[in-house]
Length: 255
Image (cartoon, rainbow, N blue to C red; front, side):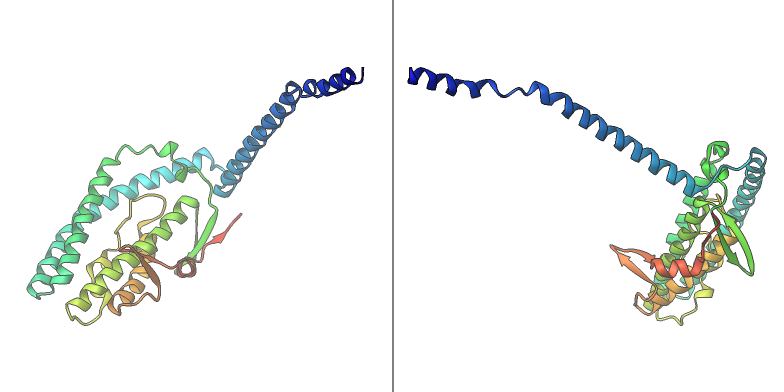
């Protein structure tokens, strides 16, 4: 009798595990996690939209688009005129036997031609659907004693202007050092032109030129003196230090 009772007691544990009851809470937990992830993504998206700013009125948007179309037309004309000047300067460099500067200038001219081709291909740009022309200003910056406002797209292009200037300035200064030529960044065609990387969008050409030259001057100093006081070199790509860019631009949030 005792052995039968013992066997019955040992058989009971086999009936305890019921995983079906655990499936429902686990399913709910996963659903809640997924819902939370979706909410986080939506919050991040709203935060990004708020950072970019509110949408401009239709009237203001159309004013900006009209200004932009006129700006692109003028910029195209400018590029046509500048190519002849650049070719004359390249010929002069060859006569002076400044071969390092000559090679650099040839590369600059080739990039200018590609830049102009890209601008022609962008004739049918959809301005109405471009956030750069309907997002309200989120930053202001000061140039020549006057404050200007721009949105995130314009601010990014201003930073690009400084970095492009530094990169081109470094190469120009390095070329003058290799040619054993006296340093003079203002005599460089790239500094005078200051349109390298400008696509005609979001900010005025004068603004781009100004900040490109700010970067160029510092890049030229570093390149000529074989140092990295204002920037850095990563696998042959030169860029200005972030804190220096911030000091040059002085961007201030308006929201």
